[in-house]
Structures are given as C-alpha cells and as structure tokens.
Amino acid sequence: MQRYMHKARTLVVGCFAALTSVLMMSGTALAAAPPSCVDASIVDGGEYGTVRVVNNCATTQRVKVLIAFGPDSQCFIIGPADSRSHVIDDHIGPGHPRFDGLQSC
Image 1 (spheres, one colour):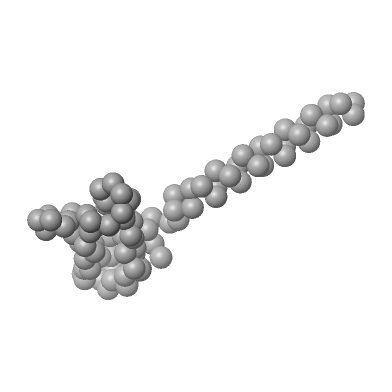
Image 2: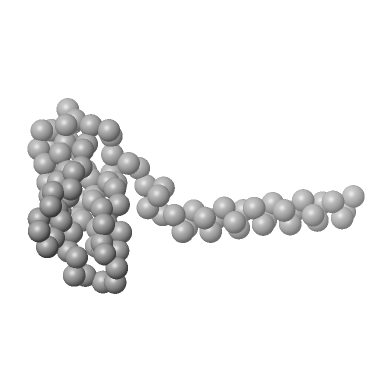
C-alpha cells in the first residue's frame, strides 16, 4: 500500500511541476484576448509595417499590440469608433518582427 501511495504522490508532484512550467512559459498566451468587436489590420508603410486597431465596440477598450521578434506596443485606451496605430520597426533585434495578435490590458 505504501508503495502505491509513494507512486501516486510522485505522479501528482510531477504533473504539478509540468503544469507550472507550461503556465510560466506561456504567460502571454494566458492573457485575455480583446472582444471580437476590436479589429486589427496591417497597413503597409513601406520599410515599416503599421498595425491599425479599430474599436467597433460600444464601450472603451484597453488593447496592446503583440509583436513577435520586436517590442509590443504600449497599452492603448481606445474609445468606441476610435483607432490607434503601432509601427512595427523592422530594424530592431534579430529576425523579422511580425504582428502576433492583440491582448487586453
């Protein structure tokens, strides 16, 4: 009986450790996405790209533009029927930055 209890405890501790590491590694993945009434589009700006975020919601939204391989935007407060833009700088860091989504903030 004691042998099974030890195996069960080991299994529980191992699962907890694995889950904790996955949650820590995916911090931005766990953040809330903005409502579907917030739209983003990429506007070609020549050497730089620009992400335009439009709030089609009836309420004010707080949104951050996520950039892979580059700096994310600040947290924008966007009123109903308003928009904000974030320039993607292609000259920062290794790799080519790209729009990676929106996050509520």
